[in-house]
Length: 412
Image (cartoon, rainbow, N blue to C red; front, side, top):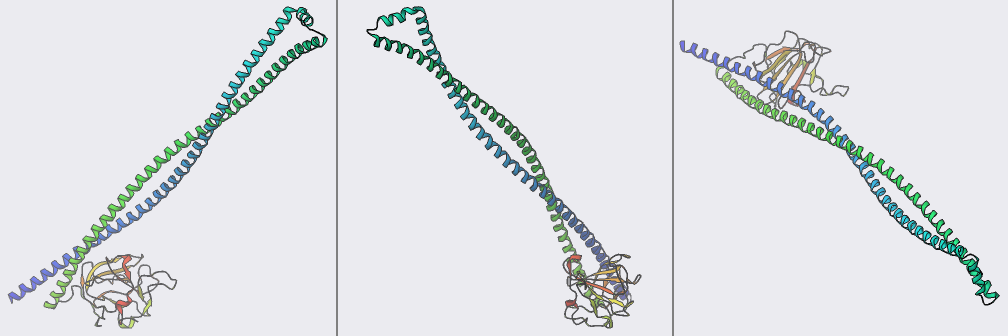
Protein backbone atom coordinates (compact mmCIF):
# COMPACT_ATOMS: atom_id res chain seq x y z
CA UNK A 1 0.00 0.00 0.00
CA UNK A 2 2.84 2.32 0.90
CA UNK A 3 4.53 1.64 -2.43
CA UNK A 4 1.32 2.47 -4.31
CA UNK A 5 0.97 5.79 -2.47
CA UNK A 6 4.59 6.65 -3.24
CA UNK A 7 4.06 5.77 -6.89
CA UNK A 8 0.91 7.93 -7.10
CA UNK A 9 2.70 10.84 -5.42
CA UNK A 10 5.57 10.48 -7.91
CA UNK A 11 3.18 10.59 -10.84
CA UNK A 12 1.43 13.65 -9.39
CA UNK A 13 4.74 15.45 -8.87
CA UNK A 14 5.90 14.57 -12.41
CA UNK A 15 2.59 15.80 -13.84
CA UNK A 16 2.80 19.07 -11.91
CA UNK A 17 6.38 19.62 -13.13
CA UNK A 18 5.34 18.87 -16.71
CA UNK A 19 2.44 21.36 -16.52
CA UNK A 20 4.70 24.00 -15.00
CA UNK A 21 7.18 23.52 -17.84
CA UNK A 22 4.35 23.69 -20.37
CA UNK A 23 3.05 26.92 -18.83
CA UNK A 24 6.55 28.37 -18.92
CA UNK A 25 6.83 27.37 -22.57
CA UNK A 26 3.47 28.96 -23.44
CA UNK A 27 4.44 32.20 -21.74
CA UNK A 28 7.88 32.11 -23.36
CA UNK A 29 6.54 31.52 -26.88
CA UNK A 30 3.90 34.22 -26.52
CA UNK A 31 6.55 36.67 -25.29
CA UNK A 32 8.82 35.77 -28.19
CA UNK A 33 5.94 36.05 -30.65
CA UNK A 34 4.99 39.47 -29.24
CA UNK A 35 8.60 40.59 -29.59
CA UNK A 36 8.65 39.32 -33.16
CA UNK A 37 5.37 41.09 -33.96
CA UNK A 38 6.78 44.32 -32.53
CA UNK A 39 9.89 43.89 -34.67
CA UNK A 40 7.75 43.24 -37.74
CA UNK A 41 5.90 46.50 -37.09
CA UNK A 42 9.21 48.30 -36.64
CA UNK A 43 10.43 46.78 -39.92
CA UNK A 44 7.24 47.94 -41.63
CA UNK A 45 7.58 51.45 -40.22
CA UNK A 46 11.28 51.57 -41.12
CA UNK A 47 10.54 50.34 -44.64
CA UNK A 48 7.92 53.08 -45.08
CA UNK A 49 10.43 55.62 -43.81
CA UNK A 50 13.07 54.22 -46.16
CA UNK A 51 10.66 54.41 -49.09
CA UNK A 52 10.02 58.09 -48.30
CA UNK A 53 13.77 58.77 -48.01
CA UNK A 54 14.43 56.87 -51.26
CA UNK A 55 11.70 58.79 -53.07
CA UNK A 56 13.11 62.08 -51.77
CA UNK A 57 16.62 61.01 -52.73
CA UNK A 58 15.51 60.01 -56.25
CA UNK A 59 13.72 63.34 -56.62
CA UNK A 60 16.85 65.21 -55.50
CA UNK A 61 19.02 63.15 -57.87
CA UNK A 62 16.67 64.12 -60.71
CA UNK A 63 17.00 67.78 -59.68
CA UNK A 64 20.80 67.40 -59.66
CA UNK A 65 20.64 65.89 -63.15
CA UNK A 66 18.48 68.80 -64.35
CA UNK A 67 20.89 71.32 -62.81
CA UNK A 68 23.87 69.50 -64.36
CA UNK A 69 22.14 69.64 -67.74
CA UNK A 70 21.56 73.39 -67.33
CA UNK A 71 25.18 73.90 -66.27
CA UNK A 72 26.38 72.04 -69.38
CA UNK A 73 24.09 74.18 -71.53
CA UNK A 74 25.39 77.42 -70.01
CA UNK A 75 29.00 76.25 -70.23
CA UNK A 76 28.42 75.43 -73.90
CA UNK A 77 26.90 78.88 -74.49
CA UNK A 78 29.82 80.50 -72.65
CA UNK A 79 32.28 78.58 -74.83
CA UNK A 80 30.39 79.71 -77.93
CA UNK A 81 30.46 83.32 -76.70
CA UNK A 82 34.20 82.99 -76.05
CA UNK A 83 34.61 81.91 -79.66
CA UNK A 84 32.57 84.85 -80.94
CA UNK A 85 34.46 87.27 -78.69
CA UNK A 86 37.73 85.84 -79.97
CA UNK A 87 36.62 86.37 -83.57
CA UNK A 88 35.56 89.95 -82.80
CA UNK A 89 38.87 90.65 -81.10
CA UNK A 90 40.59 89.44 -84.27
CA UNK A 91 38.36 91.59 -86.46
CA UNK A 92 38.94 94.60 -84.19
CA UNK A 93 42.71 94.03 -84.37
CA UNK A 94 42.52 93.80 -88.18
CA UNK A 95 40.39 96.98 -88.28
CA UNK A 96 42.91 98.78 -86.09
CA UNK A 97 45.77 97.68 -88.36
CA UNK A 98 43.86 98.80 -91.48
CA UNK A 99 42.93 102.06 -89.75
CA UNK A 100 46.55 102.68 -88.78
CA UNK A 101 47.68 101.98 -92.36
CA UNK A 102 45.03 104.32 -93.72
CA UNK A 103 46.17 106.96 -91.23
CA UNK A 104 49.77 106.52 -92.35
CA UNK A 105 48.77 106.84 -96.03
CA UNK A 106 46.72 109.92 -95.25
CA UNK A 107 49.52 111.52 -93.25
CA UNK A 108 52.07 110.70 -95.99
CA UNK A 109 49.88 112.03 -98.80
CA UNK A 110 48.96 115.07 -96.77
CA UNK A 111 52.66 115.86 -96.23
CA UNK A 112 53.38 115.52 -99.96
CA UNK A 113 50.51 117.81 -100.83
CA UNK A 114 51.62 120.32 -98.20
CA UNK A 115 55.16 120.21 -99.65
CA UNK A 116 53.83 120.92 -103.15
CA UNK A 117 51.65 123.78 -101.92
CA UNK A 118 54.58 125.26 -100.01
CA UNK A 119 56.79 125.00 -103.10
CA UNK A 120 54.15 126.67 -105.29
CA UNK A 121 53.62 129.35 -102.67
CA UNK A 122 57.33 130.04 -102.32
CA UNK A 123 57.90 130.18 -106.08
CA UNK A 124 54.73 132.20 -106.66
CA UNK A 125 54.04 133.22 -110.25
CA UNK A 126 57.61 132.45 -111.22
CA UNK A 127 56.92 128.83 -111.31
CA UNK A 128 53.94 129.30 -113.55
CA UNK A 129 55.91 131.72 -115.69
CA UNK A 130 58.74 129.26 -115.88
CA UNK A 131 56.32 126.62 -117.01
CA UNK A 132 54.92 128.91 -119.67
CA UNK A 133 58.32 130.19 -120.85
CA UNK A 134 59.76 126.71 -120.97
CA UNK A 135 56.93 125.61 -123.24
CA UNK A 136 57.87 125.25 -126.87
CA UNK A 137 54.48 126.27 -128.16
CA UNK A 138 50.98 127.00 -127.04
CA UNK A 139 49.95 123.35 -127.12
CA UNK A 140 52.82 122.43 -124.88
CA UNK A 141 51.90 125.32 -122.59
CA UNK A 142 48.34 124.14 -122.25
CA UNK A 143 49.47 120.58 -121.65
CA UNK A 144 51.84 121.62 -118.93
CA UNK A 145 49.23 123.78 -117.20
CA UNK A 146 46.63 120.97 -117.38
CA UNK A 147 49.11 118.50 -115.88
CA UNK A 148 49.82 120.76 -112.92
CA UNK A 149 46.13 121.33 -112.33
CA UNK A 150 45.25 117.64 -112.57
CA UNK A 151 48.07 116.75 -110.19
CA UNK A 152 46.74 119.09 -107.52
CA UNK A 153 43.19 117.82 -108.06
CA UNK A 154 44.36 114.18 -107.81
CA UNK A 155 46.13 114.91 -104.55
CA UNK A 156 42.96 116.45 -103.13
CA UNK A 157 40.80 113.47 -104.22
CA UNK A 158 43.29 110.98 -102.82
CA UNK A 159 43.27 112.73 -99.47
CA UNK A 160 39.47 112.80 -99.43
CA UNK A 161 39.34 109.06 -100.31
CA UNK A 162 41.81 108.15 -97.61
CA UNK A 163 39.91 110.28 -95.11
CA UNK A 164 36.60 108.64 -96.03
CA UNK A 165 38.15 105.17 -95.83
CA UNK A 166 39.57 106.01 -92.40
CA UNK A 167 36.13 107.13 -91.19
CA UNK A 168 34.51 103.92 -92.46
CA UNK A 169 37.15 101.80 -90.78
CA UNK A 170 36.64 103.75 -87.54
CA UNK A 171 32.89 103.17 -87.68
CA UNK A 172 33.37 99.45 -88.35
CA UNK A 173 35.77 99.25 -85.42
CA UNK A 174 33.29 100.98 -83.13
CA UNK A 175 30.53 98.56 -84.19
CA UNK A 176 32.82 95.59 -83.51
CA UNK A 177 33.72 96.96 -80.10
CA UNK A 178 30.01 97.51 -79.30
CA UNK A 179 29.25 93.91 -80.31
CA UNK A 180 32.16 92.71 -78.20
CA UNK A 181 30.83 94.65 -75.24
CA UNK A 182 27.40 93.04 -75.63
CA UNK A 183 29.00 89.60 -75.84
CA UNK A 184 31.09 90.32 -72.75
CA UNK A 185 27.91 91.32 -70.88
CA UNK A 186 26.10 88.16 -72.02
CA UNK A 187 29.09 86.03 -71.06
CA UNK A 188 29.29 87.62 -67.60
CA UNK A 189 25.56 86.98 -67.09
CA UNK A 190 25.84 83.34 -68.11
CA UNK A 191 28.91 82.87 -65.96
CA UNK A 192 26.98 84.30 -63.00
CA UNK A 193 24.08 81.90 -63.62
CA UNK A 194 26.54 79.04 -64.05
CA UNK A 195 28.15 79.85 -60.70
CA UNK A 196 24.71 79.90 -59.04
CA UNK A 197 23.80 76.58 -60.66
CA UNK A 198 27.05 75.02 -59.50
CA UNK A 199 26.36 76.23 -55.95
CA UNK A 200 22.83 74.77 -56.15
CA UNK A 201 24.21 71.49 -57.51
CA UNK A 202 26.74 71.32 -54.67
CA UNK A 203 23.92 71.77 -52.14
CA UNK A 204 21.81 69.12 -53.85
CA UNK A 205 24.78 66.74 -54.00
CA UNK A 206 25.21 67.14 -50.26
CA UNK A 207 21.49 66.49 -49.79
CA UNK A 208 21.69 63.34 -51.93
CA UNK A 209 24.68 62.14 -49.90
CA UNK A 210 22.82 62.78 -46.64
CA UNK A 211 19.68 61.01 -47.88
CA UNK A 212 21.76 58.09 -49.13
CA UNK A 213 23.37 57.83 -45.70
CA UNK A 214 19.92 57.95 -44.03
CA UNK A 215 18.71 55.30 -46.45
CA UNK A 216 21.73 53.15 -45.58
CA UNK A 217 21.14 53.54 -41.82
CA UNK A 218 17.44 52.67 -42.13
CA UNK A 219 18.28 49.59 -44.21
CA UNK A 220 20.79 48.59 -41.56
CA UNK A 221 18.04 48.86 -38.93
CA UNK A 222 15.73 46.75 -41.10
CA UNK A 223 18.46 44.14 -41.57
CA UNK A 224 19.18 44.05 -37.83
CA UNK A 225 15.47 43.65 -37.00
CA UNK A 226 15.10 40.94 -39.63
CA UNK A 227 18.13 39.14 -38.21
CA UNK A 228 16.67 39.43 -34.71
CA UNK A 229 13.38 37.96 -35.97
CA UNK A 230 15.27 35.05 -37.50
CA UNK A 231 16.80 34.42 -34.10
CA UNK A 232 13.37 34.67 -32.48
CA UNK A 233 11.91 32.23 -35.02
CA UNK A 234 14.70 29.81 -34.19
CA UNK A 235 13.95 30.10 -30.47
CA UNK A 236 10.23 29.61 -31.11
CA UNK A 237 10.94 26.50 -33.15
CA UNK A 238 13.14 25.16 -30.36
CA UNK A 239 10.42 25.89 -27.80
CA UNK A 240 7.80 24.30 -30.02
CA UNK A 241 9.90 21.17 -30.50
CA UNK A 242 10.28 20.91 -26.73
CA UNK A 243 6.51 21.34 -26.32
CA UNK A 244 5.89 18.57 -28.86
CA UNK A 245 8.20 16.30 -26.91
CA UNK A 246 6.33 17.11 -23.72
CA UNK A 247 2.99 16.44 -25.40
CA UNK A 248 4.18 13.01 -26.45
CA UNK A 249 5.46 12.29 -22.95
CA UNK A 250 2.11 13.35 -21.50
CA UNK A 251 0.23 11.04 -23.87
CA UNK A 252 2.48 8.11 -23.02
CA UNK A 253 2.13 8.82 -19.33
CA UNK A 254 -1.65 8.90 -19.58
CA UNK A 255 -1.69 5.66 -21.54
CA UNK A 256 0.47 3.97 -18.93
CA UNK A 257 -1.35 5.32 -15.90
CA UNK A 258 -4.78 5.89 -17.47
CA UNK A 259 -4.88 9.34 -15.91
CA UNK A 260 -7.78 11.68 -16.58
CA UNK A 261 -7.26 15.20 -18.08
CA UNK A 262 -6.04 17.84 -15.70
CA UNK A 263 -9.11 20.02 -16.36
CA UNK A 264 -12.24 17.92 -16.28
CA UNK A 265 -15.56 18.43 -18.03
CA UNK A 266 -17.96 16.80 -20.45
CA UNK A 267 -16.43 15.18 -23.53
CA UNK A 268 -17.53 14.27 -27.04
CA UNK A 269 -17.52 10.60 -27.99
CA UNK A 270 -17.28 11.27 -31.75
CA UNK A 271 -14.47 9.40 -33.52
CA UNK A 272 -11.82 11.56 -35.24
CA UNK A 273 -11.53 11.75 -39.05
CA UNK A 274 -8.46 11.02 -41.19
CA UNK A 275 -6.91 14.35 -40.11
CA UNK A 276 -7.28 13.33 -36.47
CA UNK A 277 -9.86 16.06 -35.74
CA UNK A 278 -13.44 15.97 -34.51
CA UNK A 279 -16.14 18.63 -34.80
CA UNK A 280 -15.80 21.29 -32.10
CA UNK A 281 -19.58 21.11 -31.40
CA UNK A 282 -22.24 18.47 -30.82
CA UNK A 283 -23.35 16.76 -34.03
CA UNK A 284 -26.69 18.59 -34.06
CA UNK A 285 -24.88 21.92 -34.44
CA UNK A 286 -22.14 20.95 -36.91
CA UNK A 287 -23.49 23.02 -39.83
CA UNK A 288 -21.13 25.71 -41.19
CA UNK A 289 -23.05 28.97 -41.60
CA UNK A 290 -20.17 31.22 -42.78
CA UNK A 291 -17.09 30.20 -44.79
CA UNK A 292 -13.66 31.77 -45.31
CA UNK A 293 -15.26 34.70 -47.15
CA UNK A 294 -18.20 36.78 -45.95
CA UNK A 295 -21.11 37.26 -48.34
CA UNK A 296 -19.68 40.73 -49.02
CA UNK A 297 -16.49 39.11 -50.33
CA UNK A 298 -14.39 40.29 -47.38
CA UNK A 299 -11.87 37.77 -46.06
CA UNK A 300 -13.05 35.99 -42.91
CA UNK A 301 -10.17 33.60 -42.26
CA UNK A 302 -12.37 31.15 -40.32
CA UNK A 303 -15.65 29.25 -40.40
CA UNK A 304 -18.68 29.96 -38.20
CA UNK A 305 -21.22 27.58 -36.69
CA UNK A 306 -24.44 29.47 -35.97
CA UNK A 307 -27.45 27.16 -36.07
CA UNK A 308 -30.57 28.01 -34.09
CA UNK A 309 -30.39 27.06 -30.40
CA UNK A 310 -26.60 26.94 -30.42
CA UNK A 311 -26.22 29.43 -27.57
CA UNK A 312 -24.69 27.72 -24.53
CA UNK A 313 -23.75 24.53 -26.38
CA UNK A 314 -20.43 22.94 -25.36
CA UNK A 315 -17.30 23.65 -27.39
CA UNK A 316 -14.86 20.73 -27.63
CA UNK A 317 -11.13 20.57 -28.30
CA UNK A 318 -10.85 19.03 -31.77
CA UNK A 319 -7.65 17.17 -30.77
CA UNK A 320 -5.23 16.73 -27.89
CA UNK A 321 -3.03 19.74 -27.24
CA UNK A 322 -1.68 22.46 -24.98
CA UNK A 323 -3.64 25.65 -24.32
CA UNK A 324 -1.54 28.57 -25.57
CA UNK A 325 -4.04 31.36 -24.86
CA UNK A 326 -7.21 31.54 -22.80
CA UNK A 327 -8.35 35.16 -22.60
CA UNK A 328 -11.32 37.51 -22.50
CA UNK A 329 -11.00 40.55 -24.77
CA UNK A 330 -14.30 42.00 -23.55
CA UNK A 331 -16.29 43.68 -26.30
CA UNK A 332 -13.36 43.59 -28.71
CA UNK A 333 -12.47 41.14 -31.45
CA UNK A 334 -12.76 37.48 -30.31
CA UNK A 335 -14.27 38.21 -26.90
CA UNK A 336 -13.69 35.01 -24.90
CA UNK A 337 -11.33 32.84 -26.94
CA UNK A 338 -8.93 29.91 -26.62
CA UNK A 339 -5.90 28.97 -28.78
CA UNK A 340 -4.63 25.37 -28.62
CA UNK A 341 -1.40 23.96 -30.06
CA UNK A 342 -1.62 20.34 -31.27
CA UNK A 343 1.08 17.72 -31.68
CA UNK A 344 0.67 17.71 -35.49
CA UNK A 345 1.99 21.32 -35.72
CA UNK A 346 -1.47 22.86 -36.17
CA UNK A 347 -3.25 25.38 -33.97
CA UNK A 348 -7.01 25.76 -33.43
CA UNK A 349 -8.79 28.86 -32.17
CA UNK A 350 -12.29 29.03 -30.64
CA UNK A 351 -13.92 32.46 -30.20
CA UNK A 352 -16.98 34.39 -28.88
CA UNK A 353 -17.57 32.02 -25.95
CA UNK A 354 -19.93 32.89 -23.10
CA UNK A 355 -18.57 34.95 -20.24
CA UNK A 356 -17.40 32.68 -17.42
CA UNK A 357 -17.58 29.54 -19.57
CA UNK A 358 -13.83 29.06 -20.22
CA UNK A 359 -12.82 25.81 -18.50
CA UNK A 360 -9.12 25.71 -19.35
CA UNK A 361 -6.21 28.02 -18.74
CA UNK A 362 -2.96 28.78 -20.52
CA UNK A 363 -0.58 25.83 -20.20
CA UNK A 364 -3.29 23.22 -19.59
CA UNK A 365 -3.08 19.93 -21.44
CA UNK A 366 -6.45 19.10 -23.03
CA UNK A 367 -7.80 15.89 -24.49
CA UNK A 368 -9.69 15.52 -27.74
CA UNK A 369 -13.42 15.98 -27.11
CA UNK A 370 -12.87 17.76 -23.78
CA UNK A 371 -15.19 20.73 -23.26
CA UNK A 372 -13.17 23.92 -23.12
CA UNK A 373 -15.89 26.59 -23.34
CA UNK A 374 -19.56 27.25 -24.22
CA UNK A 375 -20.97 28.99 -27.29
CA UNK A 376 -21.82 32.66 -26.76
CA UNK A 377 -21.77 36.05 -28.48
CA UNK A 378 -18.97 38.03 -26.81
CA UNK A 379 -16.55 40.41 -28.55
CA UNK A 380 -17.30 41.58 -32.09
CA UNK A 381 -20.32 39.34 -32.59
CA UNK A 382 -23.87 39.91 -33.83
CA UNK A 383 -25.33 36.72 -32.39
CA UNK A 384 -24.50 33.40 -30.69
CA UNK A 385 -22.04 31.37 -32.79
CA UNK A 386 -18.66 29.65 -32.70
CA UNK A 387 -15.84 31.27 -34.67
CA UNK A 388 -13.36 28.47 -35.45
CA UNK A 389 -9.88 28.84 -36.98
CA UNK A 390 -7.05 26.51 -38.00
CA UNK A 391 -3.56 27.99 -38.13
CA UNK A 392 -0.30 26.61 -39.44
CA UNK A 393 3.35 27.61 -39.07
CA UNK A 394 3.94 29.78 -36.01
CA UNK A 395 0.22 29.93 -35.25
CA UNK A 396 0.04 33.65 -35.98
CA UNK A 397 -2.91 35.58 -37.37
CA UNK A 398 -1.37 35.54 -40.85
CA UNK A 399 -1.13 31.73 -40.78
CA UNK A 400 -4.91 31.08 -40.92
CA UNK A 401 -6.08 28.40 -43.36
CA UNK A 402 -9.46 26.95 -44.31
CA UNK A 403 -10.56 24.60 -41.47
CA UNK A 404 -13.02 22.60 -43.59
CA UNK A 405 -10.52 20.13 -45.07
CA UNK A 406 -9.35 19.31 -41.53
CA UNK A 407 -12.95 18.69 -40.42
CA UNK A 408 -13.95 16.60 -43.42
CA UNK A 409 -16.71 14.17 -42.54
CA UNK A 410 -17.35 15.96 -39.24
CA UNK A 411 -19.26 19.01 -40.50
CA UNK A 412 -21.90 19.83 -43.05
